[in-house]
Image 1 (tube, rainbow, N blue to C red):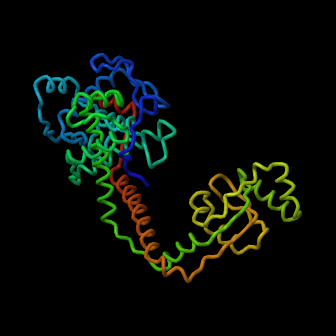
Image 2 (cartoon, rainbow, N blue to C red):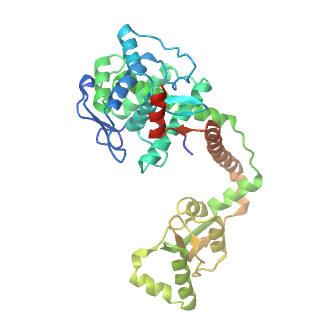
Image 3 (cartoon, one colour):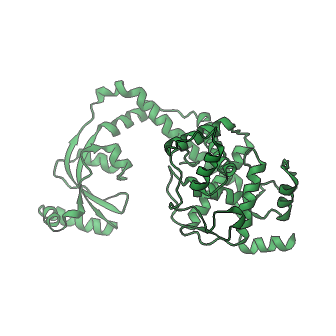
Amino acid sequence: MVIGLKIGGRILKRDSAPRFLYQERNYSNINEIYLNGDCGKISSKSLRMYKKIVVIAVLFAMFSLGIAQGQEANIPVANNKVSEDLKKDEPKYIGSFFDVQVTDANYFFISSVVDVFGIKGAPKPSTAEEREKYIWDQLLLSYEAFRRNVAVSQEEIDVEVRKILTEDKVTFDWKKDAQAYEKWVKERTNEPVILFENQLRHLVQVQKLNEQILTSLQPKVSEHEAFQEFLNEHNSLSVELVEFKNKKDALTFYAKVKSNLNFWDEEKNKKIKEFRRPGFVSLEFLMDIWKFSKKAVYQMMKQKIGAISQPFPIYKGYGVCKILETRLANASEFKKFKDSYYGQIRTRKKYEGVGVWFGNLKKQANIKIYSKDELSARKQQS
């Protein structure tokens, strides 16, 4: 599981989705903001919120979540105008976790991070609901990093800025030519530098939290597990695969092949594109990429060349395979690779442990996202 957004590399350009698209690029004259994709149109009230995000970015050296009701905020005041701007709009609470109120400013800040940097290393949200869930996960992680006092220095921000600029092959010295740097940020993100760097600060902070959790996990690995990993990678199998949407169709096809040995080739001649060959690959590859079950691949390793497997679940529906070639692992070679397999399994267990940790954190947090009715009721009470 990936709990942070990937840093480094090229940021999303303005023709990439999803991100904010502005009708006007002058911040003092923004009329409307649109979200590209399935997220819909943002109301005019959100325009003021975006401007507030920029103001908050100026005030804070690092991003942290909204203050719980009843607590006092230690906000440094830059000048009277900024202070007045903050007072104009009372914070709007849109949800909570750990009984801490979350403001819409926090939400739109994280949304802006996703818009600029995208989501790398994790499945891209295909719906507005999935995007919403991802943003709330990031909000929770940011809060947890804040609770754990995970600090990010300006030097760490500079490292990430330098990576991005190097990837983009800029010709200016961004440390010496502030105007060129500001121009580049505006052209790439349509944001001021302070917001861009605070977005990076969030990414680094969550990444450091992730590393902190990974370091704290010390899973045990048995020799049996290491040897099994060795077998998965050193046993090789080549098959011809036919895919079916459901088990019933797969069973019907399997029954026809078993009753008529020529049926496989006859069907292949009619529908050659439906008969696929993943290649002569490791069992690990078939399990990871094609989502063959461990039980299925090891059963096929025991079958004779030309034999037909029973239907089994794959990444999409069910599959039936003809065995083309097998190669057994040489068990005597395990000793040579033993330490590397211990390391592989330990690393995998750590990342699995992070997923478990985050699942438990979400349960403890008791995330509440207020409905429109709840927001209306809270507004009337205030």
